[in-house]
Each structure stands twice: as structure tokens, then as C-alpha cells.
Length: 356
Image (tube, rainbow, N blue to C red):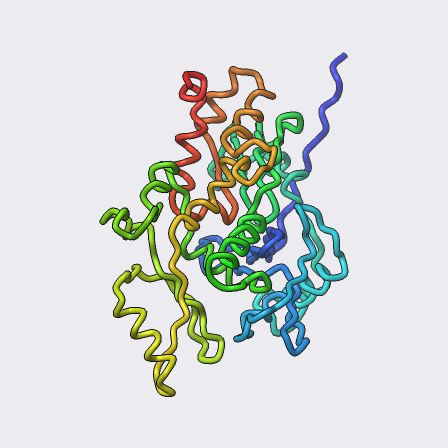
């Protein structure tokens, strides 16, 4: 006789539900509401930071800091794994158990739902009469490019297909470190300025859809006469933040004229002048994110993100490929860079890759 099906007992959710995404770089958390909006989600730095005067900042307290010069960071999540429970507990206590926190919860609350373990129960629970049945997509391909690494996860009927999950050990941290090395050689020594370089990366970097063409456009050759007029779209000036006055870093159009340099030197000579330290960025803006698609540029023997998607699909029956490619969900901080979605869609097309 067929096995007896287990009875699903529907349990009411608590009146107040805290949703937490414990990322390696930031924690995204907020209370669930009937009409959610962007203000319901709070972004908390998932790290401990120590200033030059050895003052320690925990989690969301870093928002009150005004001087990030030579700040040392300690992150409890490394390469996608939680490796420091003591540091993570301190961040959770400060973010969720502190009475002054915006996301304060009572100590009586306990985790009641886990996305991977309980999502099937949520969708299989019988619908109430006053509710509309919502069926999720059966096939979803999740591309997560975060701080520590990037993963491609096929999800079928709410469950990840373990044998087809692929991981790429390239994330936002590696891009930031690579940019630090480039800027330290070409401009200023920023090896110990992780926060500053990470902000510069988020504000200036983009993914190029024509890497070789853009690289040729920014090549200076023997002199500036080889540059084209449209290079102004790529070459920009990044003004470094001034922690003394609280002025944040910003990107502005590049001014190649000699007057700009004279003005800067004059401000440094006059006591009342406003000094602006800036870096002129060219191919650094798109050469750094290119590592997500071509890790061999720095000698890493790994497949790029499009190849990782194809490797993940190769672990599935070919009949599922069209459904997976029709429902791609992209998450992670790296996906916020301009041009990322266009490059991924163009590079991950199986027909184009097979033809090539």
C-alpha cells in the first residue's frame, strides 16, 4: 500500500516577524508588514571596526563614525562561512537586543521559520477562504554575487538542486582588494583604506559590455592626443573624502585642463584655500569588475560568472534549461553595478555560446 502522507498542521505566524538576511558585508533586516516598502528594510554593517585611537564600533554604531582613516575591520563571515560566533553575537546583540535599536525585539522571541526548511510548508499550506492562492515559479535560477563569493543555485519547486549548485570564489572583497592595489600603484597608498576604496568602487565602477573597445579608448599611448572625445564618458575624477570636514567622496567629470591642476596647487599654497585630493580614474572603473567575468585576467584558474551559469545548467536535464533561463533572479551587491545585468544576460545565452 502507498505510504501515508503526513498531515500538514498550519501554524499561525507571530504578530511580529523579524526577517533577517545575514550577509557577509551587511545584514539586511526588518519587520514584516502588510504593505512593505524600502523604509522597512534596515542595512546594518556586519563587522567590528577599530579606529586609530583604538575605539571599537559594533554593527550599526559605525554610522555615527566620522573618521574612517586607517580603520581596521573584523568580519565574522569569511568566504561565505560564519567563522567568528563571538563577533557575530556582539553584532546581533547590538542590533536586535539593544533597547535603543530600531529593530529591538524582546528576548522571548525565538526563530520560528527558516527559509530553506519551511518554505515548502508555506506554499503547501491550504489557502484560507479570504486569501488568493499564489503559486511560485517552479524553476528559478538564483545568481548571487555578494561580498565573499558568487553562487549559482537552481531552485525547483522551492528546493535547491544541490548537485547543480556552483560557486565562484570572487566577490566584492576581492574586487576591493584588487582596486586597492591598482590605486596604490597609480595614485596614493590606499592599502590600509578598505572603507575608502570600497566606497570609490561602489560609486565609480561599472561593467563594460565591450571590454576591449573601452580598454582601447582609455589607452593613453605616447600622449593625450591619442584620446578620443568620447573618452570623457569613461575617465572621471574621484574626489577623496575629507574626514576633518565630513565631506564624502564623490565622482565628477574629468577636467584635463591645466587650470584645474594650477587651481589645486594654489589652494595648497594659500592657507584659506580649499584643498581637494582627487584621483583620475580610467580603465580601473571597468577592469576591476571584469574579474567577475574573466578571472584569468589576474591569473585565477576559475571560470567566470557566465561559465559558472553554464556549468550549473549542465548538471540539470536539458528540458529544464529554458525554464531556468526564463526565471533568473539576480541578488547581491555586485549586481548593483551599472552594466552588470546587461553583460550577464548577453554572456549567459546558451545559443550564442554554443555558436561561438
